Image 1 (cartoon, rainbow, N blue to C red):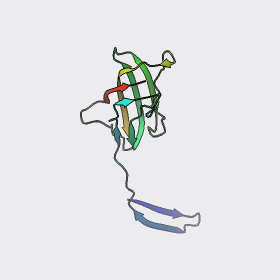
Image 2: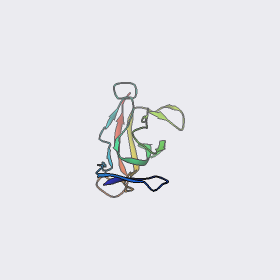
Image 3: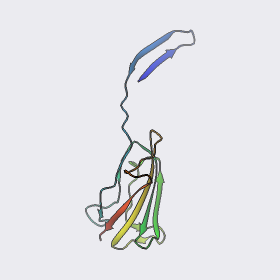
Image 4: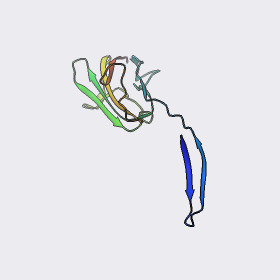
Length: 126
């Protein structure tokens, strides 16, 4: 519940009624498993709700990190466009691994359903 109390310099006080403000629980959905940077699905971007801070890492099948992004609102991040940050070249078609660490607006780590970061595989198709 949220209330509003206004007090002037002359001690005039007004209190507004308390209202309930619904807050969404933090959520991440990384269920997209095919990504086509040159086609219909141009960015790899998990959906998020009520996320305050996040870090996403993308690795090749061989374990080489080719992308890292951090931010304070996953909804404002455009997503990964398939370019290898190490070489600034398009990443080739294949399987990639990602991890996401996120902190919800309620200061709780967002997990799916096991402890630790979100993680999984997706297929980049060109």
